[in-house]
Image (tube, rainbow, N blue to C red; front, side, top):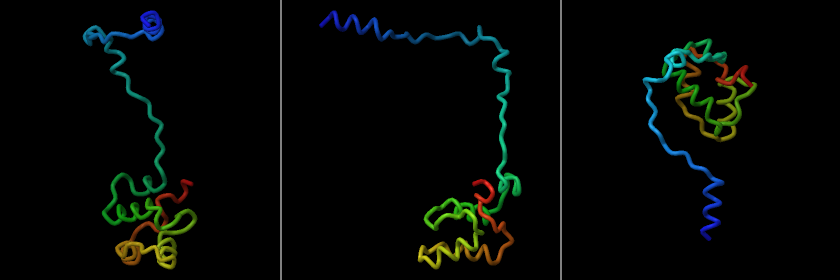
Length: 112
């Protein structure tokens, strides 16, 4: 058995943990900024990064697949369909869509 274990030690080489000195590293690599190519979705571009509590609730409604898919229809149409199917969507969403000035299209509109 000792010959098998010695063969395995040779096959699976282990590296020892060593402490490296950070003072010796070049500071050029730490000054580099990562390049990001980020595109904003239409809903983010329309509202910016700031949106109110009502929009937050509507976005949560958009993300919840319990009320069915939201592609190709407005938030109001999706809410009405969920009510007809007996899925019991939140009453707050209906109030927001009827009384407030909010974006009628879902978070996913134009993305899919």
